[in-house]
Amino acid sequence: MNTFPASPDRRSTLKLIAGGALLSGATGLFGLISGCTDTKPQFASIDITGADYARDFALADHNGQARSIKDFQGKVVVVFFGYTQCPDVCPTSMAELAEVKKLLGADGERLQGLFVTLDPERDTREVLKAYMANFDPTFLALRPELDKLPQVARDFKIFYKKVDGKTPGSYTLDHSAGSYIFDPQGRVRLYSRYGSGPAALASDVRLLIKNN
Image 1 (tube, rainbow, N blue to C red):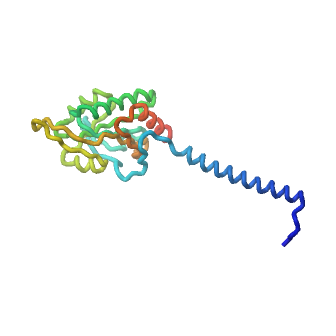
Image 2 (image 1 turned 120 degrees about the vertical axis):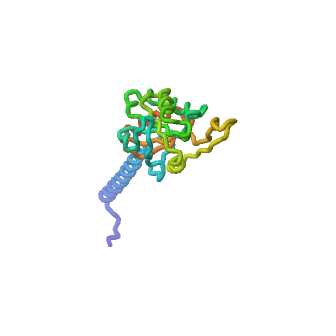
Image 3 (image 1 turned 180 degrees about the vertical axis):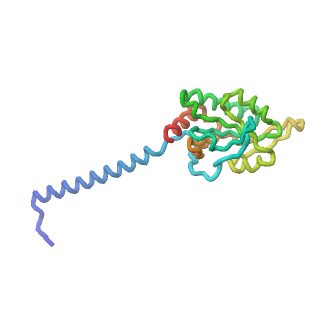
């Protein structure tokens, strides 16, 4: 082993090599950090990408046509569970979704709103069709059969409970109030809490359109 001190020229060379290695390592690390940041969109809603629930459905729409998430490939799909006699949360959520479509401008054609009734006893196809017309003509209502409803709710982790009214037909429903959002590939990606507002939801829809 050479124990003699390095010459001035050699010391300069070693410093340059070491400096270059540090710079290269730092640049590589910065690139990795930047890459990670660039590939993960910052959503306003809760990111549930990869969830093992809310994956798909097999339900008839208000026109009697069988539907699944595959029917809406190329679109961002927002799914809300409610019922037509809901006094506040349901009409507010659907009205906000209609506003989201307007905020998207030309991209509004790539948004599909779906309303799944939790009250198939009163929400007939005719009732659901008329209800959707109050918000946007392209939105669809889906109607589970009464005996299938509990399984659909479990598949989407939706809570609902009948609250008796003064008469047998005047009951209300307590239920979950958020929306599930699927990307254009048909994968569930986000859960939007009730009250988030149309601007935040429109921003998330734009990100999903842009990144798919």
